[in-house]
Amino acid sequence: MEAIDILDPQTYSVENADFLPLNGTDYIELYVSNARQAAHYYQTAFGFQPLAHAGLETGLKDRESYVVQQGKIRLVLTSPLHGDTAIGRHIDQHGDGVRVVALWVNDAARSFTETVNRGAQAYLNPTREQDDYGYVVRSGIHTYGDTVHIFVERSTYEGVFLPGYVPWNPDYRPKEAGLQYVDHMVGNVGWHEMNVWMSFYHDVMGFQQLVSFDDKDISTEYTALMSKVMSNGNGRVKFPINEPAEGKKKSQIEEYLDFYGGPGIQHIAVATDNIIDTVMTLRSRGVEFLTVPDTYYDDLAERVGPIDEEISRLRPLGILVDRDDEGYLLQIFTKPVCPRPTLFFEIIQRKGAKSFGKGNFKALFEAIEREQELRGTL
Image 1 (cartoon, rainbow, N blue to C red):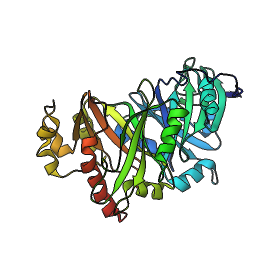
Image 2: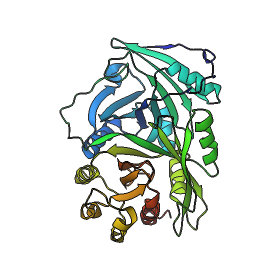
Image 3: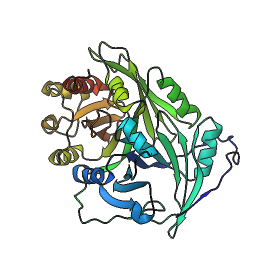
């Protein structure tokens, strides 16, 4: 693979109303302690399929990565091959967690210039990476904590994933679980930082605020948080941003910040078109979910109106339902998938709804508080 730095940041003008068009999420890279075991977990538990691999055999000396895919969701699982590396220090500070949220663009060089000229801190200068299958251009900027955005331009590339990766074709291929695409990714930031990062996504990346929730919307007897949802123009990339709010006890956001060692991605919401089948499959493979009291379902029909699904099927699975002006959604949240109580997944099915389950906040956060109490961190 050949990598070439290709752009002076002043090449393009910032005078463009649609200055950062995004096609969607390209991949999510997690730094993990053992990439091979993590890949096996995401295959076995979530039904991701093996796609690509890079490591010593492909010329990498400092890291090993496995790429798994399901629908349009690509996870890159990366571990260091030596001690005292940047990847290892990231894992030491944060545990297993999301380092890169990569965004698919038509022009990575322009995406870099537009965002850097608007105040973003550069992470990766636009770089052309090529092999026998064509070339990819990538660039990147820093965002909250140690999280970075990589802009990926791949229109001329025909390889399996990126230059430097080779196909990974193991015999072990559990069936998929019906996961289709990334619906949204939620970031947790520190006290009084939510508006700072809302402004970053608005001013630097051209996002708009979809909705906001304050501590009156997202609170229980003991804890509270505040949240604002930022979305790009076509709605394909949505980033809710959470910050702690004052409460009687330590909120889930404070717990996250303590254990993650700062701001970062709290959860990845992945979409399905049949949440009942997907959750049944995941549960059968050992994925554990947060549970709500059975009484949540007693007045569900009155709260959300008519739905296609039978409540008798949702109740034993713990699937939540909420309605907005556009329709309704079904959602459920896993327990943390790492040793630290940090990263988890949301499974969501939208039946027209464009919201994020405001009506379920109280039940959800009470469920999280029960888990915090068991951990002794409430």
